[in-house]
Image (cartoon, rainbow, N blue to C red; front, side):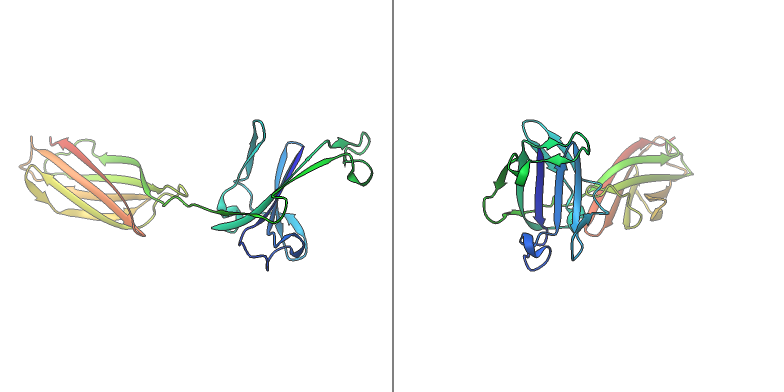
Amino acid sequence: MAVVMFLDSDANQATGDPENLGADFIIELFSGEIILFRWDGTDFSVSATQASLSYSWSGGATIRINASDLNNTRRLNFDVTAISNIAFDPVTGEADCGPGGANCKRDFAPAVGFYTYEVKITPATLVVRRVTTTPATPVAGKPFTMRLVAARSDTGAVLQNGRVTCIGRAGTTRLRAQAARVTGGAAVCTWLIPKTATGKTFRGTTTVAFEGLRATRSISRKIR
């Protein structure tokens, strides 16, 4: 069986292939291989960006592709053609539907026109990947650094810049951060632990904000 999908990624029939209701892309699933083709103005050619395209089969095909491989579409039109009873030429290995294609059965959905699909994008968040401290335990009279690594939930990209807020206390004493910045892919906060703070509890919070997204993490450690 073969499955062919025509996709109008901008929901605009005035662009794309004029003979296929403005389709900008074709997804073809055939003989265990799935390929994305892109309209280049005159014909469809293999798309250079299709890393997210995949499929599975369980009683039918489930096809997956990221919107980024379809021009970051937010609203698209599509149709599906399923072709069965395909034979293969024993010499050339090419698909053969017989004279005039009469031996193959074709099912179209919808029968006329396209389906319309609104792409729902999950709002991105910042995900805390890792929190480390140097040294492992704060020491009275010494600097104590907290590093927070955060990444975008939508792309997985580790944050490389942003605004860092550092809040630290030794017991009830508020500590002023000596450093509050993003460096080396981590939000960094450094405090100087007072010499008289031995035995007290250090509580620190690091927050990083970037493009309206925030990630925060707090720790509590006994001061040596």
